[in-house]
Image 1 (cartoon, rainbow, N blue to C red):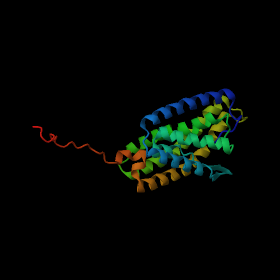
Image 2: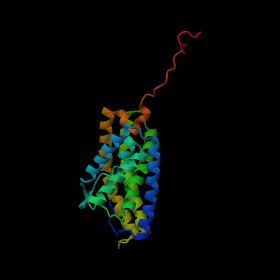
Image 3: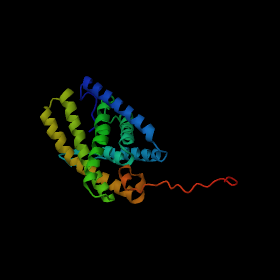
Amino acid sequence: MHIPDGFIDAPTSLAAGAVAVTGLAVCVHKTADSLEERDIPLAGLTAAFVFAVQMLNFPVASGTSGHLLGGVLAAVLVGPYLGTLCVSVVLLVQALLFADGGLSALGLNVVNMALVTSFGGYALFLLVRRLLPRTRASVVVASGVAAGLGVVLASLAFTVEYALGGAGGASVSTVASAMVGVHVLIGIGEGTITALVVSAVLATRPDLVHGAAHLLPHRRLVVGPRVAPEGVA
């Protein structure tokens, strides 16, 4: 899924970079308004986990391999705004230190693997969760389904970018069928891994799962009778 330098032309890459910068600026602004102290270590752990798993490829078909994108997982754990920032940091480190995805294509990769998967996938998560009973199992199922579909959304975004400024020799229809077909299979692995991770966190610390906040009991402020100070009638 990582796009290398030169695969998409400069105007399209610049436009995607502008979209990425704008999206990340909104995420930083929203996160600054709602970030709690306990979110910081969880965000670090989420980014570290996504980074580690993205480095591990699993075979799909015909010599093709795939890896976890992590956008939906991050969004379900820490919310779509902070989740987008987590994945974007991972993509930046990969581009700078491991040449995984080109620097000129960093905006494209952020759009596809951070913005599209985190926000598009989280919207799918909320939709599926709403259709299911109000249980932890529903959160797990919804996260798995959304993660699988989120991979397909990212492949569709890449197809649109290739149609706008692809530098390869293949036709758009060929790229679309190849990308979507392969990423449907990759999505099965993505959905399975995401569901397992969300299930494990829910079993131990459900209060740390942003997507399961609706299951937690709300604290109510109890106001007792007002007591007058001593000596005051």
